[in-house]
Image 1 (cartoon, rainbow, N blue to C red):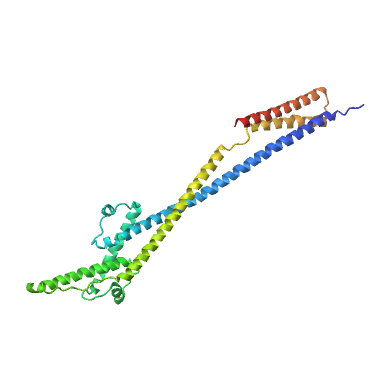
Image 2: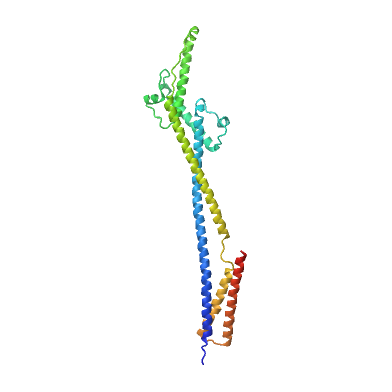
Length: 317
């Protein structure tokens, strides 16, 4: 009976190839799955960080708008008191006079400087056309503007009207005082010359002012709600980004992966390539048979050792 010398080497090569294919395929699939998971975590973190940066920019912009609206509301609430002032008081004095608002100091300073500048411009405008103001006539601000065909589009209307009334009142007081001085002392008590006083149409102005303030309050409330919503979303995103960052820092590939590759490489060389080489060269001998069998056994032992090591390592985690 003739025995085929190739059967042993062929069997070892096929068995080794099957082992390498199965274990190598499992390791490769695991690595690819983990790589895909890491890539997904990285993409999620990048997307959330991008969204977080956009929200931070929106929060900063809206916060400035919100604080500016609060400052405007502050000035609106003290507008009647400011109208009585010949000159605007320093900002520090104003803050001491109206405590408890807790406003952004930088925005408050900026808006107060703007208000001071607008008021100064309004005063200069009235003084420039003061020769057209007749204190002996009863003329409202709108009528005076139309009569003289003045362009007030680049000025604050309310401040212009305030300065107009202030100037008109001051001129009338001067005229009244001059007339009093020209009246004999014995008649001053009998004659009390009063110049007409410009009074706003209280009903319409009050209703309009009430509507305007209610509208500003609604805008302020809407801005506050939107700002709180953005900040809440930012907190959630920061928490999610920190969670993803922790998962990425804790991410790792299967332990002892290098040893698994070494064992598979050993089986591929001595369990597949060596037997195939012996068959190809027909180098049949007892030494070749012993070397092939010993290499195959060592590879199998190394593979099972690697599997046991992996199981023990995974259990310790």
